[in-house]
Amino acid sequence: KWGTVKIDFDTMETNLKGVFAAGDIVRGASLVVWAIKDGRDVAKSIKNYLENKNLKQSKVA
Figure 1 (spheres, rainbow, N blue to C red):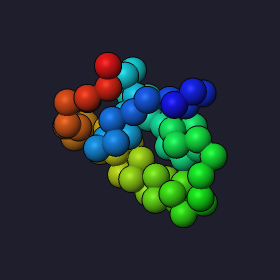
Figure 2 (figure 1 turned 90 degrees about the horizontal axis):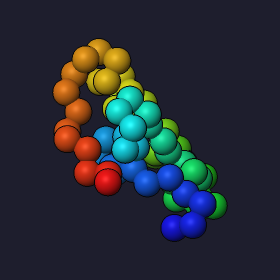
Figure 3 (figure 1 turned 60 degrees about the vertical axis):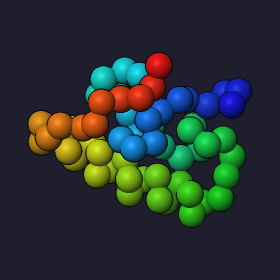
Figure 4 (figure 1 turned 120 degrees about the vertical axis):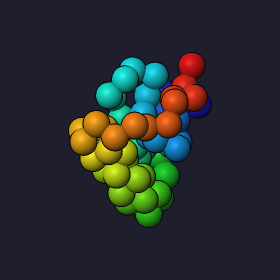
């Protein structure tokens, strides 16, 4: 979509290692419940990243 950031929805990571995105920047203007869900999902991925746990190989080109 125009004006949004592409991410791997499994890890919420962008094509830049260690850079994560969620909410409206990913989906465009959407429902707040999606932003809340994305926030929870991205928090888990960031926690895993910071604890040096392996994230799945990114699928973002």
